[in-house]
Length: 295
Length: 224
Ligand SMILES: Nc1ncnc2c1ncn2[C@@H]1O[C@H](COP(=O)(O)OP(=O)(O)OP(=O)(O)O)[C@@H](O)[C@H]1O
Ligand SMILES: [Mg+2]
Image (cartoon, rainbow over all chains, first blue to last red; front, top):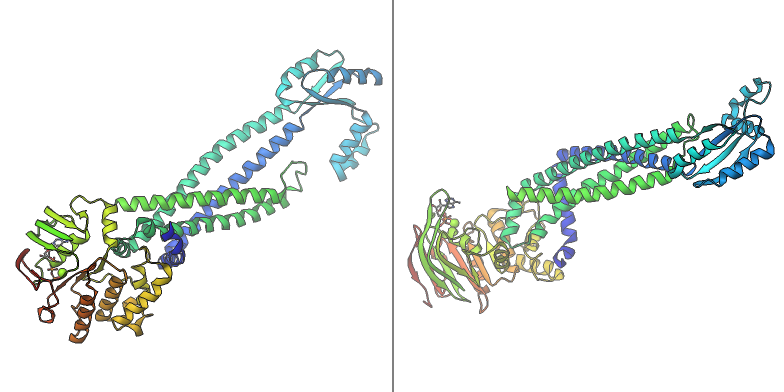
């Protein structure tokens, strides 16, 4: 250990010499590592985004309960109160016709002019029921029992679909992470093996002088780390730019998507990628060292 | 400190480099190994360094039984040796100074001593003016002296110099042999192989070992 600390300067110098001796080949390897990490970062980004969307949608799960027009104001309130008693219901609130219209105007924004073409308010009053999604089926059954309930609108199906898509995405994402990780490992271990091959005489001399294997291996480990962490950082910067561009595009057409803030997203992705690159760098270098020792 | 009994070395292609030799070298000796080209001098050095394993017979170097020693034991042994290889084995692209320092980096010599000791040793082999020259830009004789500087800075218990004067003029050769002779003391054993029998200071040597065709033919010296 002490040997390693007092020789840090030497190791850094040696690893730069190794990087320089194979310049083109090392540069191309660096490019492929960066691209692998960039693709990895994109997968991870969409992963984070979809988890966040599900989370927000689940928190905001609510049913809209519509009733027959004959139900008057006091009965509506009574109805809302009785719904509150159903287990799993978090809160209820009566939304009158005027408020329903106002909400739609807000959603439509500038487009709200179209509402002016209606002679009278086309929206019905309803009871907004916030629920715990885990009990949604029992709640729906209970709501259907209530007389005067005309229809129930829930976002159950939408959520289910998003969940399914996310499950597929997570499966593919995992496959992708494994594949890109394996590719990086192979590239790195190949670079290390190549470096060892080019330096085989020097390595043999060091062995004859009694140098410990860790002393011989450390410069190569550093090469692997510089390549992967460098590639990881560059990929993170590229991902940051891609995220910024994506957000700029998305804020127009789908303004209500509950996206995480850009800063948080970029920070988390960068953290994961740099961590992965450290892991893969060490893993790939060790793999390269191991396999070239055997041959 | 080194004992060999019926020591044989056969290379994988069938060449019998050493055909059963016996000798003993004690701590603090100065031993010259002579013999014509191809007689087996380097092969013996390789056995002592653990670069080759004995095919049969016994070889003990310091506390190590070479036939069965494990890699860690070989490494420990090598750290106690100051080797001058026949083919020198300097690292190209590095300066004389860096080459000499490299021999000390993983020994128990403190870091602040590396540069001082390396500079001193290079001065001693008359290369003070070539400290910052790259190894590949030196003449063979100069490189030989860098290799010797690398060996002696390691404060070794055993100096193994394989043909250290091979390409040197008489003046430099005598200087190198004098340096190597002077390193011998109670704790340090020095073994030198050479063709140049006329340069050997027979009064300084404790043992003269002559190898021919893989066998020891004459074993003499002032102390044996
Ligand atoms: N790796 C090897 N494989 C096969 N044969 C070898 C090998 N190394 C040496 N030899 C043979 O072993 C014999 C002894 O060689 P060695 O290098 O020990 O001689 P030497 O006394 O050092 O010669 P020189 O004075 O020329 O350096 C020679 O016949 C040589 O060809
Ligand atoms: Mg030889």
